[in-house]
Image (cartoon, rainbow, N blue to C red; front, side):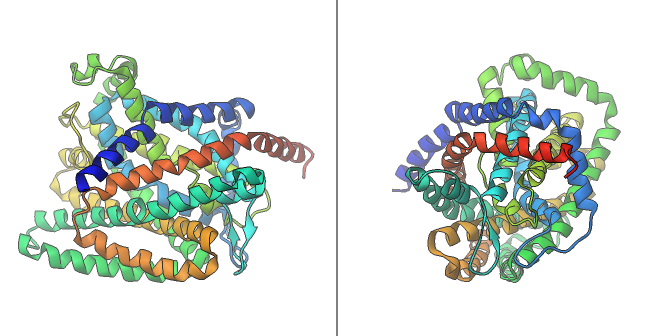
Length: 465
């Protein structure tokens, strides 16, 4: 039975994250970019000015809402995760250095897709029975499209609930326990016999802390993420910059390998990766999996923002993809390629390749800091996806299920810490990809609304409103 599930999941997964799906995701991004006259490039300086300016402005949000900065931090908490460390390493190993170039391409188009998702989410959001702002793909499908399309909203929400326990929780907790176990092993703090007990304790601690944060509602989630995300991103970027600076002589060769490998991967990988399409597929899929542009999930957090200007909040979507993929994913790629660690092209690789890049440059002591970074990345993802899951199940069954869901979601952390997940990661990744289908259809159909809102916004800005 298990082998049947595995083979069916593999077939669906290969299609969802395969070339046809990549064409759909890139295609929608291209359509949105053309219709908005490439707003992500044309208005990039303005987007940075607006988003950074609003982040530096300290103010409290109204009840049932987050500040715009808290909203973007919650969305970044979910997107900046272990995929930025392990996913990039996997893309380079399977697709060669050229995969980084295609990651950049997917990010440029993804900026416009995410801008559109966030703009629609804020424009079509609602206030629930508890007075909280709620929105996301299920709400802009429900409130923006005709009743003939409403089944897509329920499909998205159902896939969302199925995804959060795997992608958002169990696999992330498993990453935390693995990172802590490795660090403790390196310093001979624990023996192999004590691993099970240590992991159980870690799982219980995470479950308790997670329940405390999530049951506090959107305001507490926002208060945690606005402190955790800047800290973890800054620590990781500083460590990565150190590797790049110390290996600065390799930078020209690395960029040459990235651009040459994008179109002729065999020349860089010695034939181990000879397919142009493999390099493109891995770069695009890892980029999308990291920044979630096209999945629609980030817009759920942005819909909680205390703002009356959908387009202004939409610029945070551009900022978010830029930080996640152009900055953090590129840093990870440069750590691997500049440090000179041996990459076995054509073979699967994960976080261990990135960690090796750090330890080769700094020494084994840095494994403690990489463990802390991975724990922060994974824990922030758990928090962000907890909010996504709560909003999805609330859309299906009402606000009465929120607290029971939060408790169950928190307890799943113990499962993730103590069990061999095996097939769960692959199944969760499949459901994650399935969420993109109803969302991309909706964003494509509502692209005219995005164009209208952009025109109205800049007409108002030009008039000094």
